[in-house]
Image 1 (cartoon, rainbow, N blue to C red):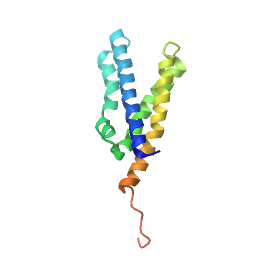
Image 2 (cartoon, rainbow, N blue to C red):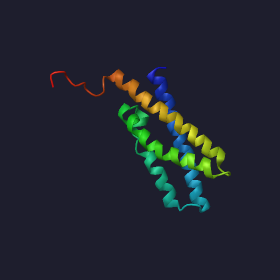
Image 3 (cartoon, helix red, strand yellow):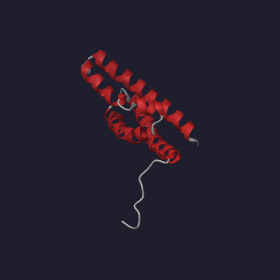
Image 4 (cartoon, one colour):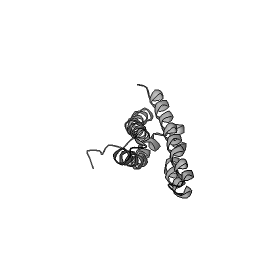
Length: 125
C-alpha cells in the first residue's frame, strides 16, 4: 500500500469519526442526557490535530493516536454497558481501532520517505 492511499484512507476515516461523534454528542446535548457544553467538550480534542491530519503531517499522525485512545475507551465502555446504542458503539470502536493501526503506520511510512526519525547514536559517544 502506498503512503498516498494510506493517507487518503486515514483522512477519510478521521473525518467520518469526527462527523459520527459530533452527531452523537450534539444529539445527546439536544436530548438533555448531557449538557450542551459537556457535549461540545467531547468534540474539542478531536479538533486539535485536524490541520495536520488533513495536510498529511506524519508527526501529527503519530501523536493523534493518543487522542483516539480516549474515544476508544468511550466506545468500548458503551459496548459493555448499553443495549440501546450498541451498533453506534461497535461502529465507533471498529473505526477507531482501524485508525489506531493506520495512523502510526502512515506516520512511519511517510516519515521514512521524508527522512525523518530519531538519529542513531554514534559509536564514539
